[in-house]
Amino acid sequence: MRDVVIAGIGQTRVGELWDISLRSLAYQAMKAARQDANGLTPDALYVGNYLAIVTSHQSNLGTLLADNAGLTGVEAFTCEAGQASGGAAFQMGFMAVASGYVEAALVVGVEKYTDAIGSQQEAALAISMDADYEAMVGLTLAAQAGLLMQRYLHQHGAPRSAFGAFPVLAHANAVNNPFAMYRRAIDQQTYEKATPVAEPLNLYDQASYADGAAAVLLTTPERALQAGISHPLVRVRGSAGVIDTLALHDRPDPLAFDAARYAVQRACEMGGVAPGEVDLFEPDDAFSIYAVLGLEAAGFAESGEGWRLGQNGDLRLNGRLPILTMGGSKGRGNPLGAAGVYQIVEAVQQLRGEAGANQVADAKMALTLNLGGPASSAFAHLLERV
Amino acid sequence: MEIPRHWRLKKQRYSLQGEICPHCEGKIFPPRDVCPHCGNDARTTFTFSGRGKIYSFTHVTEAPAGFEETAPYTVALVQLEEGPVVTAQLTDVQADEVEIGMPVEMVTRKIRSDGDERGIIIYGYKFRPVMQH
Image (cartoon, rainbow over all chains, first blue to last red; front, side, top):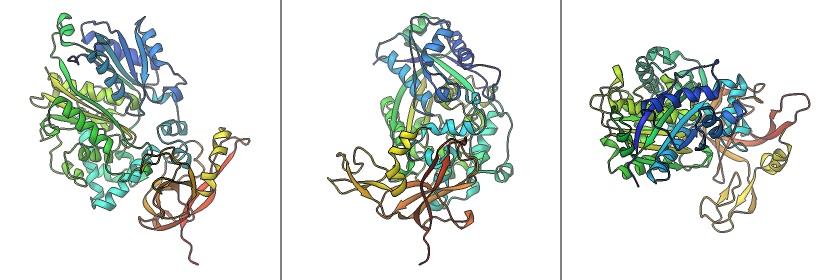
């Protein structure tokens, strides 16, 4: 396989972006990524998206978005893995360049969540669960997380309040991210008073679903040099996608997040490093319990102990293992099928030294983990500054 | 309205019909094409007793379309006494009485309605605390 570098990144503000369409939102990020890569022209476009087929009644996004952007004649299609669609699309772009199939690939994650409103939103979100045996009985994504959180509290005796550390950290880091949906800090007291959504899970345990688009341009180091790119390049050292059972009820141990465990292991083995060697970690914090279970699955804590990492400052920007460095999904907003690409873009900002006030000192290597549902699918990526 | 889909699932919905693997005797619900225990084809039907206990639960306040009338409601992972775990709503119980380990039994209830007056009403399994006999 050839070396693959991220030559350009782009992202839009995350939020309820009523005034911009799916195609234009994606285009903003695609254009920014191409500009950042000195105008490199991609041979292919891979789209990460989860809900457009329901919320915008739109399929064939590859063609729509490439067509709208004037990328005539390229290969283009959607990679769909529920909320891990962004991670899946990035992996597709990586493989296309690594294999020699294309010289440059553009990956865009895009979500127009607010094209649906009210209870139609929850119904749209439910399409990533087992329709016959989960969604049909009234399970929601938040309820899946609520079931896991309830069991975690019961099984491991963690204090309920400990989960507050994750949204508090995410909001603190989002303050300095100009693309974030919530640029304000919250405190533990605010967290504890929040209204329940799927008890024991409350409003602040859940990242707000939102619109957003993020893009990266992948190519070979040689091609990037030819293009005269002046900013540092980031190499993709490891990439892995793994599935678990789709339905939570089919797992011997629902708290294990095995797909996340194996995805991280395989991505790190591919890169020849241990997870402990990374300078920052971007776990999936669609729900605070998922951040905790992701930390455990990635091997940063023993089973049942992940919540403790939030208690002593380890996860802060100046801590032992900085996470959610630009606000994660809780602070930045959760653009669902685009979230996995946002994670990559934010990790690249860190590795290039462009993270502003949130810069992790001397960040050379980063790990990202994007989950579909409760780690029904998981994509892990290991990135390193060249 | 997805009528064929609901019709197709009636044995699962009304009587918890799953499978027993002819190769390893593993009991399976919901039905699958391949036995998760031994990897062979699973096709022999098996009807579950409907008795189990609560593995975990959550109280849902933000309901999706089709469930607005029901909210708030409690969803649980119920471990059936034969082994498999099923996702289902609880019924005939106060939210604050629910606890992990509580014995429950299956009953048939209205699950959701398809909105307009001509929409179908879907019935299926819910679980309630085991009645004292």
